[in-house]
Amino acid sequence: MSEKLSNPYERHIVVTDDGSTSLDIPEMNEMYHSRKGARTESIHVYIANGLKQIAAKSIAILEVGLGTGLNALLSFYHAVQNDISLRYVALEPFPLSIKESGLLKFNAGKNDQDWIEKIHRSADQSDIAITDHIVFRKEITRLESFESDERFDVIYFDAFAPNKQSSPWVLSNIKKCYELLKPGGCLTTYCAQGQFKRNLSEIGFQVTNPKGPMGKREITVAYK
Ligand SMILES: C[S@@+](CC[C@H](N)C(=O)[O-])C[C@H]1O[C@@H](n2cnc3c(N)ncnc32)[C@H](O)[C@@H]1O
Image (tube, rainbow, N blue to C red; front, side):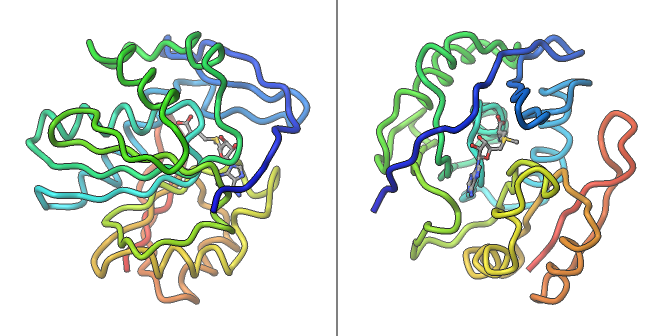
């Protein structure tokens, strides 16, 4: 069942250093992506170190924190270019308005506008076809309330940083992610906080720390 949630924060569109847009929440002093480059960061963390780690032609992704839809958009392009059948389920308690999503510019490819619009116009808990081989589903909910019998190959864990919003990172949520992953699947995130990594290990994940994007020391990719 979907939750009734209202966004407590004002957010503003910003252009990051690689020319792609992101959102800024001044009250939280938090961005949706790195100021150094939203698209560059997403490609490195979620596509190169997440999606590309799975050698299958049919892949299911769960995203925690859909936000602007950039990770979804980049995953769609990757799927089309590599003949992958993709199922993409995205959790987001505070979806963007159509006005907000209409201001986004990612310069990722020729389908940007069409796919971003489809993502943000899609109804809660409805499977929609992006192409013949890509299905997208948005769930307007927090990870804490999400329940599913589906199992995923990759989890993009893209919540706000734990020092800004601790609730998504609690142990019970990380356990839930472990349950939601298929054996051999991976959780990938920009976050490399010590406590988070210890929690992942405690639950049974094999934790790796590849190099981060744009001078960032490391990110986290954890395998089941
Ligand atoms: C860093 S931003 C996401 C960036 C996003 N992946 C993108 O490409 O734009 C974090 C997102 O997590 C969402 N969020 C906050 N609390 C959450 C929770 N408990 N479960 C899932 N998502 C949450 C926020 O509303 C926000 O959209």
